Amino acid sequence: MATELGKIWASISLTAPGADGEPERRVAARSSVMNLVVIANRGEIGERAASIVDGLAGRHPSRTLLVVPADPDGPPWLDAQVQAHCVLPSANAPETCSELVYLTCGGESGQHMAGLVTPLLIHDLPVTVWWPNEPRFESGASNELLNMADRILVDGSGWSGDGLGRLAGMCGLPNRYAIEIADFALVRQARWREAIASTFDRPALLPYLGNLDRIEVHYAARSGTPGASNVVRPLYHVAWLAARLGMTVTSPLRAGTEAWSGYEAELRHGRRRVLVHLQPMESTAPQGTTLAVELHAMRRRSQLWVEVTAYAEGVLVHASLDATPMPERRFLAPRRREADLLAETIDTAGRDLLTGEVLAMSAHLLGR
Image 1: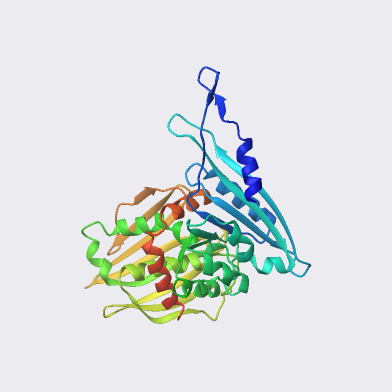
Image 2: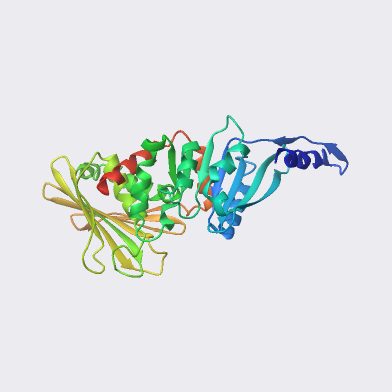
């Protein structure tokens, strides 16, 4: 591979048209800030991931290894392609180039992905493993990858079923492998967290923050059967609130026994019981999408209701104190694309304390 990359870099022209149309010398900066290993179980997922990574080459150049396991029961085989991606120079920056290696492997080769990846890594740079689809943390191949990784990226909102079994397994990975985790499902909720937190910056409402007694999250579902819809995102809302407010879990999350009954748990905040309910709602939105977060608090004989909802371009907060509506708050905060999520997780590497706190509380909520 090194030979092929050398040929690619040698073929790059060192001149480019200048402002006057005459050729002028340029510098192609071959640069990488990390090794990014993308594990895709289908070719189309790999192509989408490659397109996202390519769009970040100017901001976060990397050596990207895109691995697509195929035909696990067939004979061992391997197909590799090497590409160089460059961002054209600007007035403020030289041309920046990074590398993309496609690896399609079958049979026994696909069971030892770490063996294929390790020789291709740039030494002394961190290794991030990204599963854009559903990871299988329990497999031997994944175990080998996790042992060599510094960080993993996932999107728990796309996991099959309710996603809770896979989430429970992921919560134990930081201690087992000493790695950092970033979940796009949690990163997307930043606008919800900011809106909820800002609700209590009003002096009249701040005292109620320590008196919450109910947290209810409504999520989109096609079927009210527990386990049919992914509830990773609804659970993350609860885990974040519980972690930030120092709550403890007295009764882990459990599924209801009837259709549309959702999931329930119980927390404790000081001497106060806090009831948790994840409530499915029939909706055309993607299954598991958070539709609303509702909070209830009692302070002496006064009660507060807060409802937070979101739409494509922002978040709405409605609050009522003793049944008297307060002025609506509207926050401009558009939904972020995968490219934005990937860029943010790269930017916060080594500084993301929130995810660790939320995953630890999620583990308690799941009875781990």
